Length: 184
Image (cartoon, rainbow, N blue to C red; front, side, top):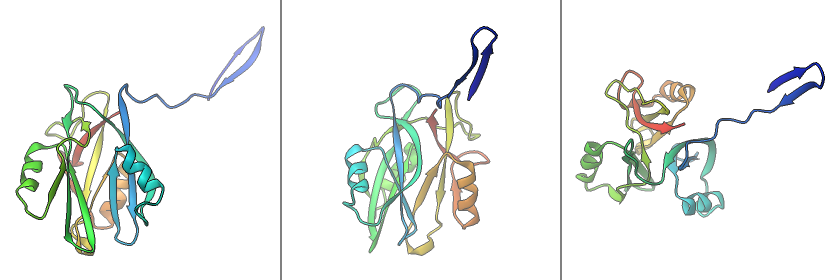
């Protein structure tokens, strides 16, 4: 809240909104499936609609999201998205902005490429830092807990710490293991 006063007109109060997202960004929405302890992210409007309307029972929004770009920019990388049913009845998705990781997963017959570019996002420097205007997206791996892999992607450092306390392993670059960089 911003408050200002002027002797001749009195006190004014203004509600300040959060800074608008970068132009051209779209949100990645996070979902959770409590029965498996799995997380899922998507920026695809049809998937968001289907998940929100119960087409995939059991998935619920966590309330967390981060920004990405729908189209390529010079300061971004495409994010590959893979899917696996090798852990039936559980399934899993994997996302990466690193081409070498996408290539490694592609070589594993248990994973199927859904898209080479689910969205576009910044990539951290080798020390895990993000360029100006971007914030780290931390990637955490469940370390196979529950018999199937799951990853969680978050910009919230407190959520990152909570997941590590539950035995999840940080994956990425730098001390804090940033896996991507989200435009603010």
